[in-house]
Amino acid sequence: MTGLPILYSFRRCPYAMRARMALWASGQDVELREVKLANKPPELAEASAKATVPVLVLDDGNVIDESIAVMRWALSENDPEGWLAGDDADLIATNDGAFKHHLDRYKYPNRYVDDPDHGTVDHRAEGLAILKQLDARLAQHKQLKGDRISMADIALFPFIRQFANTDRVWFDAQDLPHLQTWLQQHLDSDLFKAIMPKFVPWQAGDEAIAFGPGV
Image (cartoon, rainbow, N blue to C red; front, side):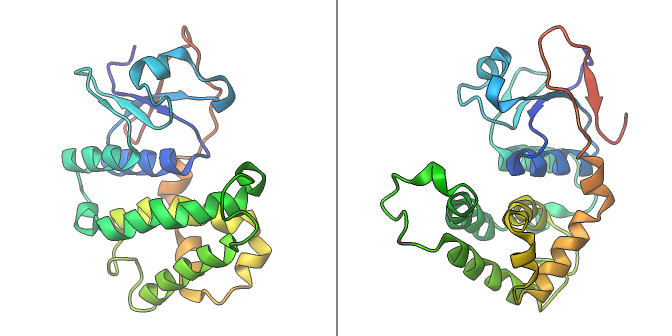
């Protein structure tokens, strides 16, 4: 055991990405347990009945199993770059609600054939409409809440990355110049690179992996 909080994560999950980014930015090291979604370890469900990543188990036994709550906890402990000043509940709610709804149905259409709007709603176009609103915001300043990176940027970035990567040629051809620049800057950032190494999925008995800026 490392004596650190335990983070159940999945490298490519956008919810887990934003949690890892906030933990890293706050200087919080964790014991990382990479989860294979097709074969989740029983310890994940024991920690949280939801059994979805991310799940953060604190050293006092308390469990945080919502990504935004993980971000807010980490930044409340230490927020050296002032990210919490940009904790925009409305932007995050639109991303996690309407945008995620359209993103899922655009990226995985075969999973949603039973949806009432299947085949009648152009989910890519609906997602693009939301991104155009963000592009207009970014025409005014470098980041979503001003010229400095804040929690809103990090909370939304992994989902916009996922939308863009669904068809990158198409995305790059859209009239989203400010958003495209913003996205590339975050993709190229040292922070994003730091939280994206590959790990073998964790199983009970494996050697603990300490993960964070202090290890």
